[in-house]
Image (cartoon, rainbow, N blue to C red; front, side):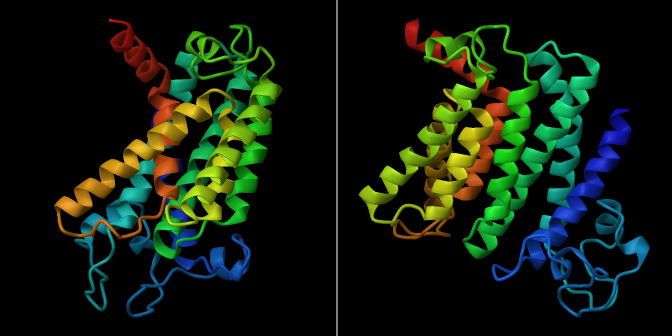
Amino acid sequence: MWLLLLVLGLAAGSFLNVVSLRYDPNRFLFARPVIGGRSRCIHCGTTLRWFELIPLISFVLQRGKCRRCKARLTLQYPVVELLSGLIFVFVPLRLSSLFYILHSTFYILSALWILALLTLLTAALIDFRLRIIPDECNALLVLAGAGVALLTPVADGAGGSLLHSYGILMFASQNIWLNKLLGFLAGGLGLLALLAVTRGRGMGFGDVKLAAALGALFGWPDIAVLVGMSFVFGAAAGILSVAARRKTLKSALPFGPFLGLAAAFMFFAGFEFVGWYLRVLVG
C-alpha cells in the first residue's frame, strides 16, 4: 500500500511540475494549454519520450540533462516529485496518529488533505516563479476545508483542531464550522491589516487570499500558529539569503511559499511543536 501511494505521489508530482512551469496568469489554471499536450524540453522544445518521463528515475539516468541538447534541467523536477510522493505516504500516517477515524471516512479525509497539500505546493511553485498565487488554488483549499469540516471527528472538544487540547487553551470552539469561519476571517483580515500597515511592501493581496483560504482549511486557532510560523520561516530564509549574499535587505521574497511551508509544518508537527513551546514557556 505504501509503495503504491509513493508511486502515485511521484506521478502526481510530475503533473504538478507541468502545471507550475506552464501556468500563464492569463489562463485558467487547468486550461488545456497548461495540462494538455506532450511534454517537451524547456530548452530545445523536443518532445520527450515515455522513458524520459519516469519520475525521479529519468532525471537520475540522464544525469539531470536533456538527452538531446544536453542542457541542464532544473532540480525542481525531482524535488517536487519526491515531495509529492512523501505527501501521499505520510498524510494517512499523520491522520491516523491524530484522530480515530472510520475506514471509509479515513480514505476520503486523507485524499482531501493530500489534495490540499499538493495545491499548496503548486501555489508555492507558481508564486516563486511569477509572484502570483492563482485564485483556483485558493478555491480548492476552501473546498477541501469544507470537506475536512464534514469528516473530521470533533469528540475531543477542540472542534477538529489539529492541536487537540492545546487548541482548547487557545479558545477553539467545539463547533468545527465556527472554527473554520473564524480561521478564514483571522487569516484574511490579519494579513490584510498587515498589508495596509506596510502599504504592500511586505506582501501582496494574493498572500491575503491564501491566508484566508488556509484559515478555512485549518480553522481557528491553528491558523494563528500557521501564520506565525510563516513569518519565522520567511525571516530565517531572508537572513540566510542576505548572509549568502544572494539578496539584500531591500530584496523582496514571495511569501506564498512560506505560508505553504508553515501549513505543512502545522499539519505534520503543529501539535508536537505547540506542546514543546508551552512546556518551555511554563518551565
